[in-house]
Length: 141
Image (tube, helix red, strand yellow):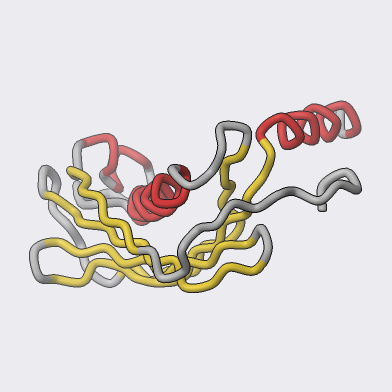
C-alpha cells in the first residue's frame, strides 16, 4: 500500500536468474573508495554490482512508472579480486511477497567465490517515491 492505494504488481517469475559482468576498474577498488588501502575490489563496490544486477534483472518486467529500491543487503565478502579483473554477479529471485523481492546474490572471479548473500528490493512507484523524498526533506529541514 502506498498512500492508501493498492499498487498493481506485474508478474515477475520467481526463480528468475540474471548474470552480469563487471570489470574492477580503479573506481571500484578499496583504495579508491576509501574502504581499504589496497587495489582490490572494494566490498561496497561488490554490493553495488549485486544490487545493480538485481535491479536490472526485474526492471524489464516493470512498467515505466515502477522501479525497485534496495532495502536490505546481507552478504559476505570472502575473497579479493585484483584490479582490472572481471567479476561475474548472479542474482536469483527466490521469493516474492507483494512488493518485496528477495534475491540470492553471488559474485565470482574465474572459478573462485568472491561473495554471496541475500538482497531485498521493494517495488515502488517512481513519482510517489519522489514525493515521499520531497516530503521527508521538508519535514526534516
